[in-house]
Image (tube, helix red, strand yellow):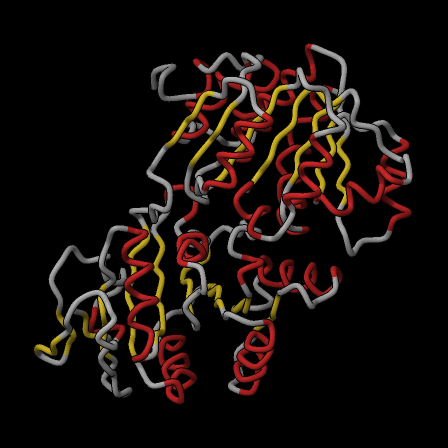
Length: 413
């Protein structure tokens, strides 16, 4: 293996390379290979890459190495509590090697432990914008020495309405800081933020914004609304691994979880109406295998990093087509294969069209021998016709499932 293929040629300090080796990381992902050397040089970065491509390590290593060379703090802003915890899990694997402490500041958690952690003078603060401002207003945390700032999942933070809080935070940090912005998409609001708060950033784009991972096969069933639950049970019979299931609404997540429970499936739910304790219990239970199915709203589309998710099910199509990319990116992590199944209703032709336009790929339509399937409305992407019991259409297929049709009893277009 050459230095171009491993972490040794990326300018990383030997103590961190040693830790990388011990943790079993052998080959850097494309975003890591491009972003780490730039970040270590102290340059501003705009990193555009799909979910599941190792973005956290791509900013963790440069931040820690820079902090080892100079005084000051590192700040990582994230959109959700779950993502804050997962980012911290990466940092605490490396920070102790440099005698650094981290601190997580998230809403919904008790203030006391966070205040205690701040008194330990952490070098890295990982926070959601609202809770960080709470501590700043109480003068428990100062950012006038923040020399490295990361905006992780920046597009998601803006989608969730955090723009005013982010602006307020960035006004308090030194202007000569290093800023690294990582995102899966590059909407106009982020371009405006870049122009205001970054200095000659280097853009590292691994794939075009909105591109779905190639190692994730995709298929879709079109059925009447009252048959969705029946189809869901049939799909679950054909898979044995962990399943992440998305609904559009919090109420819908609760209803689906109750339905699955009555159908003797172990399932938990996670969304913004659940307390931090409930969300942590659900996520930990899903990771440990106590729950086979995690029912989630889009709060989890980029806030969950769980290895070994066999299947993502879009029980409801997302309102925002970009969330489709983030949802299905929860499977097929770190180069592994994954599969995504979407359930659409006949009137959702325009929703399907918008998703396919974004991912620049047509999604295979499938039949199930026991569930009547329908055609998408005329506002869909193309015309559909049935052939040999399957829907057929022109254009490049998004790929069928990874299992033989005979085993899964699903006929593909």
